[in-house]
Length: 460
Image (cartoon, rainbow, N blue to C red; front, side):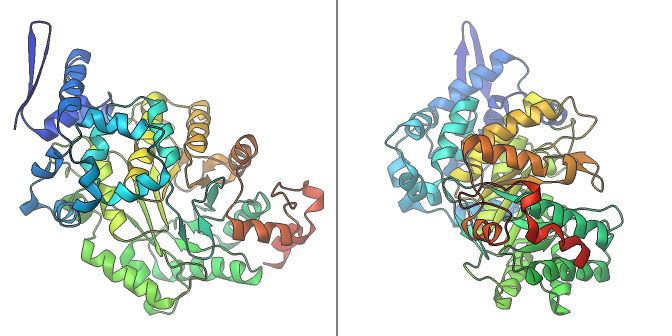
């Protein structure tokens, strides 16, 4: 189906849905690299006007990637909840935007309709929204998950403690973990990206994190961010696996480039559930995504990178994860050129994920060859706090010396909690108080008063 909109004497024609979505997207380097971006601001605005008039239900009748060719499309179509969609079925995309922004559209309403919203619907409406709209609606969405602590509650901000080391040195990783715990970080997970894929090292790292966690009775969950097949092998060896990690994307071909399928993810989830290691909940999956991953694998099917990212959240939603993390600026300026594009992409990802019912966090990050700096990240970090992000990253000094990119530090998490009155997950906050790291109000005590953990490093 073709879509048209006339600007003055010029008639703009968009051949199909994925062309319309691509032309309506805010400018970004990845879509230009793929040759699918709007050729001018006039064409971009014409596409948005045509998109605003499109019935929301059209996303159900035209697939951006054919059903027969793609298991992600089949997942989206086959799992669509028509009953949840019923109250939205008569809306255009523009009217859907207005409905989302109404005061009457509250948290309970958004949770009720989430199973009826497809990734393409979420992506389409995001293209009609200003940054403040993305923040305002995402703030109303609450997705709460749990394993050993509860993540996503109102007034709470969790942190993934990321103690990476370029040689997987156990003492270096342990020191970073202690440092993060002293700053109240780690309630989302203590998650290490291993420098290599050696199974013995992966098992050693899992045991290291679990030893620290169990010795000090930290109510959090551990994760080693290796390929899902390695985690399955580690479980077979009896390793203490809490969360199963995997990068996922929005097309079958892109997921195959990651070496995964929906069936493999289901196998891993069932294996982790069988361990019954959760105490307050049983969300056992941790997924990471990022705009540009499908394009970098030449598996985008001519679909814009933001719509492809939203489709990755349909994959995540299927497996009821504890955490989903958009690593927004990690792939580089070929996909998100500068701070402006990174900020916009991060807000889009958080909005689309939350709208679809996914527990979204964000690695507020950039690579050193991007036209971005830490001031841009401060802006995005603060916007995420206002928007109700479930979790952010905590990296020593904000500089990941293993992955070689810039992220957010333990101090950045402390800043965000302080200025917005946010607190850690409740179970983790109680532990911080018990250990003498935080006071009864959840605020960190002065370093000299934190006696319980000051000697921890010496005992590891």
